[in-house]
Structures are given as structure tokens and as C-alpha cells.
Image 1 (tube, rainbow, N blue to C red):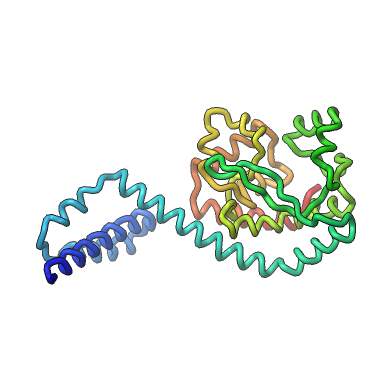
Image 2: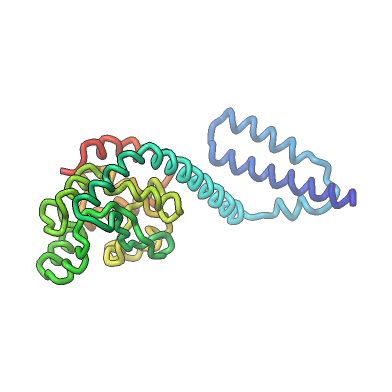
Length: 270
């Protein structure tokens, strides 16, 4: 019994040492590096009573990379849950007022769940406040010229040029208030606070052979493309911007995107 306890404790300390090494790789600061390496060395000095240490330390770079990726995703999820909940509480009065405006202007339903392609290619409903008439999707199918303009303009028409958009809907789009329900998507895990914007199935063709790279990440409320405001490009430029983000994603870049998005949201749409 005592030997089993010692082995278990020794294995635990080795995993702690590995976690410290991973933290060193993430932090990258000299002082933290020195102190953490000292801690790691101290832990590794635990008396060896079996061959467990050799087997644990035999983990390759691929295994360490997988662990680091798991920790990274867990940290991002924690940030999404915390930030999403805080933003939802702060924006609740605005969301309630906007939802009431939709109801008084054009009745039910107040919310609209557009079908988008999510992480791993899984479809999900991207929630918004309804800004169009109830039969907006059928109207697009009925009007060939409207559908052609819709496709030519990157699968979206300007609110002032789209007859399906209601009067309240135009105001919601100008102020971005129609996007607030996507905080529910963040909380249920189908979206992130920051990421490439969600796309419909027909848009995937613009990403070519790199579509799997796009779908490896959760779509976000804010993103590199949307943070450019009025200067954001249409396809194929949009695909280049989104792919550049997913290939070089970091907490620092996500923070920069959030900061740049503040004035974009305050200015509103054209």
C-alpha cells in the first residue's frame, strides 16, 4: 500500500513538472523562466523508487503539443464564459429594449437563428434579433435578381438596398444591436468572443483547400475581418484576412481585435 502511494505521488509530481515546462513555453519571460525552471528541477528531485519517471519523461514533443493545445483551448473557453456572461449582463437592458422594438414593429418571432457552419464543419444556428420580414429567406428564393445581387455582394446586401429589411431592422443593423443574441452562442459553446466570422455553406468555396484551417476554429462575434470596419474587404480578400488570423492566433492578437472593435461598434454601419 505504501509503495503504491509513493508511486502515485511520484507520478503526480512528474506531471506537475511537465505542466511547469509547458507554462515556461507560454510565458516566455526571463524572470518567470528562471523561477519556474528552479521549481521544475526541485520537483524532479523527488526520490526515484520505480521506472515510472522514465516512462513519463519519454513523452514526445507531439504529446506535449497536444497537452498545450488542450490547455490553451480550456483557457479560451474560460475567457469566453466569463466575458460572455459579463457582456450579457451589461447589455441586458439594451437587448430587452431592442427585442421589444422588434416585437412592436413586426411581431414575432423576435429572434432569428441563421444556419451557419461552425467548428469542425458542424452546422449551428447563429442567433440575431430579427431584422427582416418573417418570409425573408423565401423572398430571396423567389426574386432571382435579388438573389444574384446577394451572392455578388458577399452573401449580404446593404440594409438600405434590401427590401426585406424592416424599418426597425435597419436601425438595429446600423448600431450592431442585432448581434447581441450571439452572446448566447458564446455561452453554449458554438461561438467564441473572438474568431473568424461565421459563414454559410456557400461561402466555403472562397477558402479553397484551406477550408479545414478555417473550420478548425470556432467562429467569433468579433474578428480580424470585422475589426477593420468600413475598410473590410469582400471575397477573396476576406478569405485571406480570416486565414491569416487562424494561422497566427494568440491572446495578444485577440485582445488587439477587441480594442479595435470598440470604435467600429460605436461608429456603427454606414
